[in-house]
Length: 364
Image (cartoon, rainbow, N blue to C red):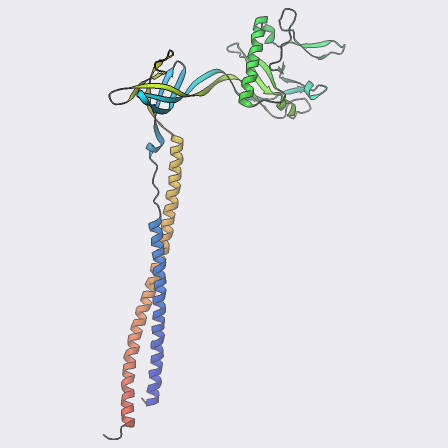
């Protein structure tokens, strides 16, 4: 090999070696970047909070109750006071058999008057009357019926309510008082309508008792009716029935009696006073199942989210590891190539040295 050719070959090998070194540096830089990304993902894993399932104990509380006839009382707060006394609050619950409650909706019919306020409403043949309004009476104080129009001869058309017609004067007096109470209860529970309430009485075929049904006059006036006067939609009604009612009693002084285990067995309300009274106490544990179920559902959702996040991060780490493995293999290839180039460079270097020596050596 001539000197020029050897020099050219040496320069080419030097360039290749430089390129492999540069590519190796680039690969190391990429592997460093991948390492940083992997570290970030592992830090994310370390920073994630593992969802913890809810404990039933967190939604369970001890409830102390005592009964007073039909009243069921549940103690809500107990504040200790000097002398072994407590200031307690409790909630009384009972069934009110004469409460106003929702009733099945009904279709109504309407006979139009001169104005909206003169309209007359019916359910079947039963006419409604204004609740709490004085019942028309005759000279003996009995129900006298109601004028609802004129016949073709100009005579009054009298409507006689089937239920009111059966009542004596005293019974009518009592009914008027009851209707005043009904108005008060309806207004308190369902709001006070501008035009008041209408009522009709129907007889229970089994018990033969009469049951009132109430409806808001405003709703009747605003409802839509067809050409026959029948309401296009069912209209909401109310009646008298059984309903659970509650009342909270606060700030009552009490003294508790405990058994040998510390369990409450009785409570004395207003101890030392004239109206002191003692009741047996029942201890129960009450679990708020609805809230526990909500918490469990939230846990299942959080666990699903957590598992999804773990899977996503692990997938990304696996991709990084695969990319790093490929770069590692490429770096090994470059290392082998670098060694081969260096070996060839050493050989060319020796050829160049021999050529130089033979060319420029003057004496042997």
